[in-house]
Length: 209
Image (cartoon, rainbow, N blue to C red; front, side, top):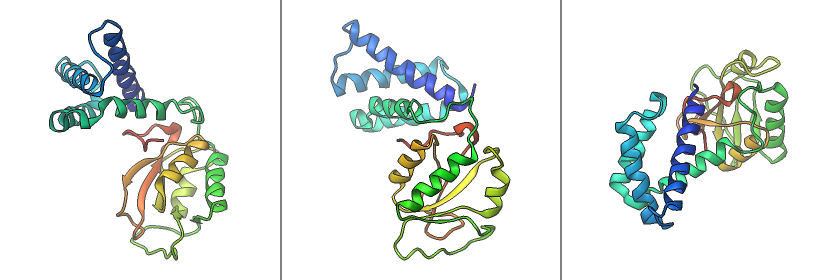
């Protein structure tokens, strides 16, 4: 199974087990009770190796959050957000390729909204891109040519300086998930690095929609 399917199985199971426990009267519908239940449930799942090893890092991270933050960890909210992102109605299914048209439509959307969209230069070393305060999206020309024929065949790197939530929403509208590599440092000065993967199959949880 892919990372995405493994993570989707996990969050669906966690939330379904919580609902079942509430229906059985074992857990009340309060943040404290739900948080305690999910923390205990998570620890048991880790000990039993109930879920795929591909998501083990996330499970251990959430376990640590629950132990150090208590209800402030908001495990239920985190799981619901991941589930909603993966099930967003505008996203491409795993069986569907990401077409050139979808990528070009995203770039056109951003340009129409006042973003500087630059894709005609190579980014093979540290470069500076002056934006004069505009939101900015830079794509390496070589990466664009190699990654995108009629469909996306390898990860496409986006260098971003601007309102990331807006970019995430626009990408979702075009059926695309974004995966953060860095939110600040990258080859393009003052730009974060994000990636779009073929079939939206990234090796980590994407940016939450």
